[in-house]
Image (cartoon, rainbow, N blue to C red; front, side, top):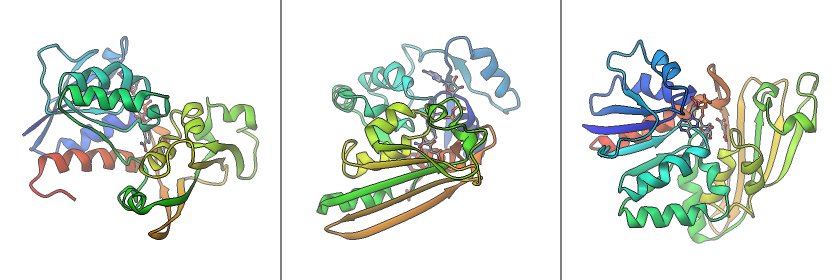
Length: 267
Ligand SMILES: NC(=O)C1=CN([C@@H]2O[C@H](COP(=O)(O)OP(=O)(O)OC[C@H]3O[C@@H](n4cnc5c(N)ncnc54)[C@H](O)[C@@H]3O)[C@@H](O)[C@H]2O)C=CC1
Ligand SMILES: O=C([O-])CC(=O)C(=O)O
């Protein structure tokens, strides 16, 4: 059995815990919540048969087999870096955090010192295997468009680009590099960062973000060209009820990755 610590227990975290209850080979012992939210998180977990212990930091003597981050950009600096230094293998969904200059190198150095690894999960997108394989032969261009319902852009800089409550058609709210998209939209542009880290890098991946009042889905579309040929993918993700910014596939991506660490065959 693999022993897991989970950072963050919101829409993704609860969804993952619900699915993991059915897998006897995976056990989440600890959930790390942000300070002040422990009681709320305990209430969220009250109906679980064996709820994990809720803490605000990993105990000094804890040695989980894996730490999985489902919290947000700040959690990478706060929890993932120190865990790597301690030799704990980490899986993360807040890949956009790696848009901060120098953070990739710091994570690599921490993992090397701890003789462990950090895994960037595909989350709401697919095709990362093909894109990163295509990169080996050389890529010429990667263009990504993220389209979400207008409500998914609430409390983001999109509110300065348009009136989200009154737009009647799809409206471009951002065009630029993946690095800038991830910085400005930490809860909506992790896919942009993941595609660029697998492909042409944060500064050469062109990103368009769209608020679409006529859509009920989070649509992720990218086109890649290079020595391998060409590749297009359109993924129409259903948003989670608990958080319209986040696609349900992100939950399944975490469960798949954890299962691949525990089961005899990984796919
Ligand atoms: N790679 C991908 O495709 C995707 C990645 N994400 C990432 O996942 C994150 C979480 O998404 P949701 O679960 O939908 O958000 P949510 O807002 O429903 O839940 C996040 C939870 O983490 C907690 N939290 C925040 N910072 C923390 C910290 N430093 N330490 C411990 N707990 C902390 C919050 O209190 C909250 O309970 C997003 O912020 C985003 O960065 C989200 C969607 C897709
Ligand atoms: O869940 C999604 O559809 C993608 C998302 O929020 C992100 O890229 O940060």
